[in-house]
Structures are given as C-alpha cells and as structure tokens.
Image 1 (cartoon, rainbow, N blue to C red):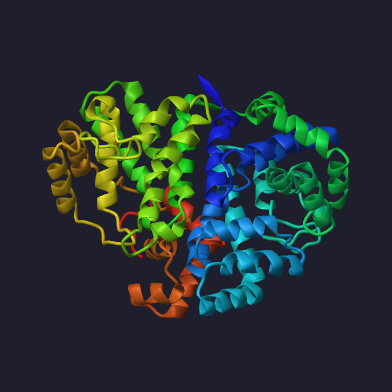
Image 2: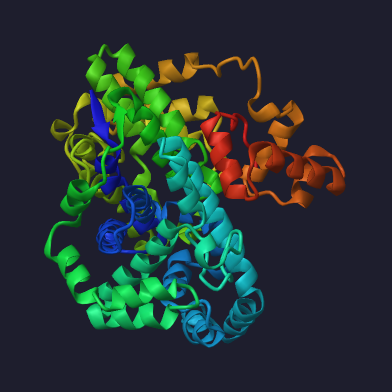
Length: 516
C-alpha cells in the first residue's frame, strides 16, 4: 500500500502556517494558486510540481529561527506577520510596517531599543532568519523524499528578483522559477485574505522588480481576479490533489513513520527545550503498546501519533514556551490549545484524520482534569492513555524553561502518584515505566557525517542554543577551539545555522544527554 505525499501535506502544511502566524490553510491556497499560475504560463510539469510543493512547504522552516526571533524581538508571530506584509526591498516600507509592529505596547525605553535594532540590524537579522528557514525547509524536503528540483526551489524561496534576498543573493532568472512563483503566490494569497483581489494586485505590483519577478507580476495582475476566484471558489485541497502533475509522488505506507518524524522534529525545533521530545514519546508509546499486547495496527498508530502529538505546539509563541516564570491566565489558555491545534493539523489529511482525535487527547486525564476537552475516562481509549503517560514521563525528564529536568526516579514517582490519584491509567503508566526502564540507546558503529565524539558533544550544545563562548565554558576549552569545532561540524553536515544542526541531531538521534 502507498499514500500520496501531497495528500499528507495538505494537512501537515498547516504546521508551517500556524508556526509563522498565518491562518491554517494559507500555504495550501498559495500552492493551489501556484499551480494555476504555472499552468497559465504553460510551464513544464516539473516546474509546476516544484512550485506546488514549494508553496505547501514555504513556511515549514520558519520554526528554525523562532527561538532567536523571540529572544531579540519578543512574540515571533508579530515580527513574522509584519515582515510578511512589508515590501522588504523598500526601506521606507520596512520602517513604516515592521518598526511600529515590534514596538507596539512596549515601554518607552524598550520601544527605542527595538526601533534601533530593527533599523540597524534588521537586514542582517532577516538574512539569518531566511537562511535558517530555507535550510530547514530544504532539509525537510530531502527527508520527505522530494526531488532535487523541489529541494532547490525551497532553498531559494526567499531570494528577491533584485538580488537582495537570501540565502544566496541570487537575482533575476538565476532564481528557480518555482521559487519565484511561490514568492509571488504567497504574497498574493496573504493580501487577498486581508483585503481581497485589489489588495493582492496592488501588493504584487508594488513588489515587481524588487522582491518579485516583474514579468510574473505583470502576468498575475492581469489575471488575478480569475486566478484567485478559482482558488477561492473551490476547496484548495481538492484543486491541489486534482491538478498535481503526474506522476504523483507516493510513499509506501511503512514510510508514514518517517514522514511523521520530519514534522515531529519540526515541531520540536520550536524551542531548544523540546528537541527530541516527540521521538522519545513515540518510542515510549510504541514499546508500552507492545507490552500491553495492543494490535500491530494500533501500535503503529501510537508511534505515528507520538511523533505528531505536539505539532500544534508551533501555534503558541516561543515567548510562552520559554517563559521562566509563572504563566498568566491568557498564556496558559494558549498552551492548553496546542493539543487542539495538533488535532486540527492532522484532520486536514484523509490518511491522518483517524489519528487526529488520539493526538488531541495527549493531555487528557482519566479524572476529567485534562485538556483541551476535559474528557472522562470512558472517552479515552487505551492508546490515548498510553500516549498521555508517555508524554508526561518524557516531558518530566526533559528540561523546561521554568524547571530543570527531573531524574527518572522522580518522574516515575510522579506518574505512580498520578495513577494512584486516578489521573493517569495505572496499566498505561506501568507499561510506560517498564518501557522507559528497558529502553537503551542503540550502539552506534559509526557516527554520521564523519563526526567525532567531541564534535557530537559540541553539536548538542549548538542545537541547544549555546553560543561559542558558552560552549567553551561548558567543555573547558578555548573559545577559538569551540569556534573551530562549530565550523568543522557545519562543514561536515552541510549547514550554516543552528536550526538545521538541531534537525540533523534529531534525525540521527544524537541528543542523548543534550545540555544547554
């Protein structure tokens, strides 16, 4: 059996939307518009296919710089949306859109600081953001098994026609046409949502020759009403699936775990505190399900659900996940909604929809005290009870912004107390604890990419957000030596950003004992 990759991505692309601050489904609309625009230009199927997938995955890499954005500016969604609505090639427009957005509601001193940062460091910061985002997006496309042309297009999706974009500063027709299409359709769909066809036409026209290919802009603006009308009049999901150029990309059913692993890693990339969380939850849940003699299909579903249970985490600002103090009532409500967002992301795919309810229950408790529905015990399947126990155990043993990691023995006692109090299922807890006590890391005969043991130690710290100075302090080496190690690692694994280094570490299970 096989499943269409595009069918999975019609739902999972919502991770990119919500992680950027957009409405769920914007990337799907952009992808549909890219197909229609490409067809109207009589582009080859290969380019239309690349534009379709670039549109779907345009924003999945944005989580790669969420930590840095929140640290510098605060709520990353505010910054992202201001930048998305700005003509970044026009300094006056940047000053008129981004500066007011990032300074709104701040103290007078903080407003001045953020305004200065935006005006003096904004371009450099934006280049670093786009580089990380594009690298992460390309890496995700590689792991999804998409063709080289799609990977290349995603990597160059933030390039500008005038050469002022990132990550490579390509200009004009040196930029893949699929990337140019996705840049245009993303802008058009956003402004169509904000102000209709006229707003979309104006936004694309003003960016022609700067951010956007001027010939594509002229072609689009002359047909905008018809193109957007078709996308808006039908379900964009149906449009994408019906119009995908053949042969369609399909993956064997057994690769569903790999696909889920990509998006689980993307969700965990949101903050260094959660790197590797979903993989460990999935492994615990699978092992516990086997101990409870669940059927093979149910165990397989548990593993996929474990990998995807926290994809909705991206819809909550990093400033909340990384807040060291007590959350406000509003912030806590945002946290409670992440399980709902996970459920909604999966519901967008026919293949994943049957797992949506299971994913959405990972914070439910048998006594009705959980969230987001407050389910009673009779509403929770054994798989849901196992997933809840596995998530609770792994989260307790992983450091968070507001607390250190608990020792395994402490986490065990917490789970046993919750089982005794009727909050967690006793059988599920016993199975998870048994799995945790017997699961050991696989012996690696060879480290990936030719990394040395010392370089893996450095990679863990890089992934955790440590600066070169901090790495030197933690490993008792000179800063120059730390810098040398970091550059060697980046060269070996083919990246230039912390985000992609973290994705590499998660993909290859190198985060055991990760520190910050």
